[in-house]
Amino acid sequence: MKILRDLFKHHLAFRAGAVIVLLVFLLVSLSFFSPYEATERRVVPKNQAPSLNHILGTTALGQDVFWLLTFAIRNSLMVAGLAVLIGRSIAVLLGSFSGYMGGGVDKVLQSIVDSFIVIPRLPLLILISVIVKGGLNLWGLALLLGFLDIFWPSKRYRSQILSLREREFTYTAVFSGMNTFNIILKEHFPFFIPYLLADAVSGFLWAIGMEITLAILGLCDLTRPTIGTMIYWGNYYQALLSQRLWVLAAPVIGSIFIVVAFYLISTSLSEYLDPRTRLKRLGASQ
Amino acid sequence: MNLLKSYLLPRIAQWVITVFIGITVTFIIPRLIPGDPVERTLSSLGSLQTLDPRAVESLKEALADLYGLDGTQFDQYINFWKRLFKGDLGPSLSAFPTPVIEIIAKGLPWTVGLLTTSTLISWSLGIALGTLAGYSPKRLWWQIVDKAFISIYPIPHYILALILVMVFSYYFPIFPLVGGASGKPTLSWTYISSIFEHSLLPATSLIVLSTAFRFIMAKALTTTVAGSDYVGYAETAGLSKWRIVLFYVIQNTMLPQVTDLGLSLGAVFSGALIIEIVFSYPGIGYSLYMGVFQADFNLILGITIFSIVGIATAALIVDLSYPLLDPRVRYK
Image (cartoon, rainbow over the protein chains, first blue to last red):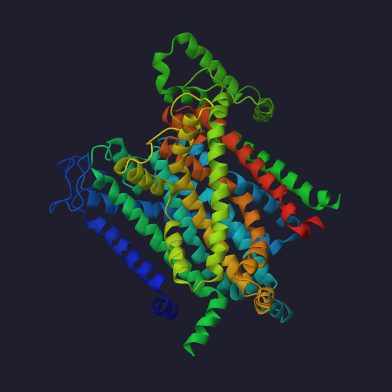
């Protein structure tokens, strides 16, 4: 709590990011009060420009853009959130296992991880979603994105663990007879968790981008509103050429706000956690 | 000799492992889904009605041959490799019987051209700007650049490209909307300039996005180096700022950037695919898009395999050129 207050006080980027994220969550919670169902179509007049009745206009399928957007953001955030949860949990296990084990195990694991890092993920993602076409609902998509986003983060976590292992307090703990499990849990985790939080955002952003890309290609469940499928249907009904910009503008602007806000929070968080800037900050407040 | 043993051989081994894992994954994935892959592929192929029955039959044979469904899984796996070694990726299903490798060969120069130019430009631009911004972080100008890049960086490739298309091809039609060039491929000035004109917008979106990443990384690295003793001594000795930036800061921050370039090539390539799709740029990404559009599974598989091998090789080349830059590796 104190950290949050500190961040809020000292960091402009954090303040901006936090306010936008709060607004986004407000928008998402509005989706539960939507007068229309998420997948309902032809409920409002088609192709209306923004007006008082439909503040962000309506789509070619007869949906209200504003309410559709609330569902879309909710679904996109859910997919990305779940993907991050799956991917990062495995990454943490893999990275810390590799880092703590060291030696031959570490070498073998690292060469596998390095291979997966080099392999371009988009073609692989497209290949898999083409094969399971139709079978890829939002959960499947989240699972797939999660599995493909294990390797880069696990490498970063491994190097964090390696550096923690060599710190003085680790040796102190070892020599004072603390067992390994306790060292990991009580000495290393407090350092590791904040790093993990800041890092998880990058996976979140990647998942949002990939969801959009796959939806544009028509490779995921197109009946569910997400940011990507909103753009897909906008393109499908030629929103750009027929001057119905509002259909595309809502998901595009919405996604930019979301990603920038989350990114601002994560950079300010990692800057806050960086011991060098922490010292500077302490110096400034004294 | 020492260099070969301690540096080059492990890299080459890593390349072999990468290619092996990548190809094995693409072999396993289609087999994880239950059902007959031949029937599945045929049923999802939209253009089937327009083909005559004999062509369908030969398509079926080609597919069965392609999936190599005879024998045990292990036999199939060995056959899969044998065909790849011959450079045989099978025929395209939507443009039967054109070999997939031919379609890839047609798109390759466009993708490689787009990718190398934009990578080179964004890499040097990102490092140059990032270093300067990290060296004098108090300047208002650099703070503005910094904020701009930080807000551009997280924007998904597709969204940024879409905005650029909307603004520069549609509302202010400065650039052509789609394609790679206009007119017949000749060595004339008009053709070459049309290539340039068509690539400008896709390249710009790619450059903007990758420069943002390089910039952020270079700035972070520079902040660390700028506080180090040798930079402090150089400043006390009264060396010019340019000299310090060029020979003291950049030289030391370059190395992690080279390592990272090799590793991040896969991600850059994925980004290029998205950009090609948005701009209908006639490279591999666009072929991939057409493959998805026409349910041409074989083309998608071929492009996936090809890009895994291609990116792994490109990363190997970057890695192998590393000793040229880092004397510590060279003289070890």
